[in-house]
Image (cartoon, rainbow, N blue to C red):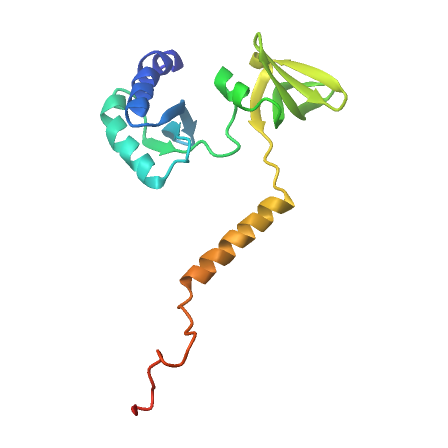
Length: 186
C-alpha cells in the first residue's frame, strides 16, 4: 500500500476509531525493518496511555487495517520525545527546547537545538542563542522535543519511590498490647 493510500484510507479510519475510544491518533506509519514490514499506530490521551489502552485499540483496529500489507502491527504511545510532525504538535511545544535534524548540512551541521518558536508557512522556527533560525519542513528529517530532567524531577521521583516503599512495609505496632506473643503463653 502506498503512503498516499495509508494517509487517504487507513489514517482516517484509525483516527475515527481513536476518537470513539477516547484516544488521540498521533501517527500511523508503515516502515520496513530488515525483512519485515511494521504498521505502527501511535495513540495518546491526556492522562497517558496504558498497556491496556494499547491492547484495546489493537483489537479494535485490526479489522480496519487488514488491507495493509504488513507483518507486524504495533500500537503504542508516542513517548515523551515523539517527533513533531503536525501543526498541533508544533503548537503544543512552542517555547520548549527542540532538536532539529536536517537531511543535508547547513554550514557543515545537520543538527540544531533551540527554543521552538513555531511552524510558520512550512518552516520550523527556533531561537538558537541570540538569533532566529528557519528550516523548511521538507528539509527536516526529524524535529523532536529535548527532554530536560532537573534536580527537582529527580527529587520528586525519589520521593515517589520512597512513598511506594513505605506503602509496601507492614505497619509497625505502636503499643505492645496488640502484639501476639511467640512463646505460647498469655
